[in-house]
Amino acid sequence: MTEKEERIIISVLLTRYYSGFANFIFWLSGRGYTHASIALDKTEDVYYSFNFNGFCREYPKRQKRRRGKSVCYHLEVTLESYQKIKDRIEDIEKRQEEWYYNRMGVFLCLLRIPLRRQKHFFCSEFVAEMLLLSENIFLKRRPSLYLPNQLNFELKQQVCLKEIVYNPI
Image 1 (cartoon, rainbow, N blue to C red):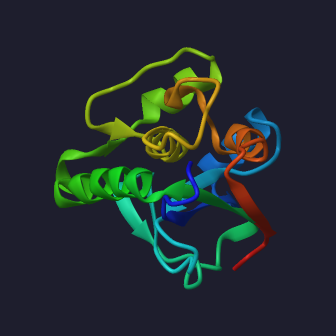
Image 2: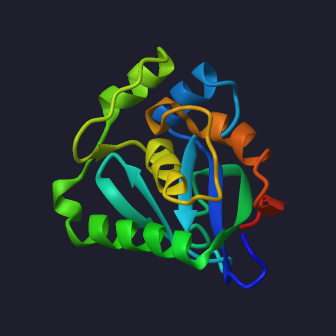
C-alpha cells in the first residue's frame, strides 16, 4: 500500500458458541473457536456469516446467551479491497435465498479435503473467501480448508493486523 491509499478497518470475529454442533467442532478442531463472522467496519455492530439457515446478519452485542470466549481481529485494507469485499457481501445478501450452509464442506474440511460448492458456505469458509478478495490478506490454504480455530492462527500473522481484542462484546 502506498502512503496515499485510503485504508479501512474490517473486523473478523471468532467466537466459541455452545450448541451440539459447536461442541462437535470445538472438540475436533483444537478446542478453540467455533464460529467466524466478518464486519465491514470497526464498530462491531453488524457482522456477516453463514449458519444452518444460510447467509445471515449477526448482531453479537445482542446475542450473548449462547456465546463463550471471543476474539476480534481488526485488519487494515485498502479502499479498493474493502469495496470488493463489500460488493461481494451485498451481492450474496441480495440473493440470500439462493445460498445455503455447507454442512458437507465442514465435514470434508475436518478431513482436510477441499470442496468448493456453488452457492454454499460454512462460516469460516465464507470469512476466508471474503478475506481473499483483499490483496492485503494472505491465507496459506483454500477457504474451504479453514475452520474458525484455524483462521485464528492465520489472522495473527497478517501484516495488515492492527489490533486484537479479546472478548470484545
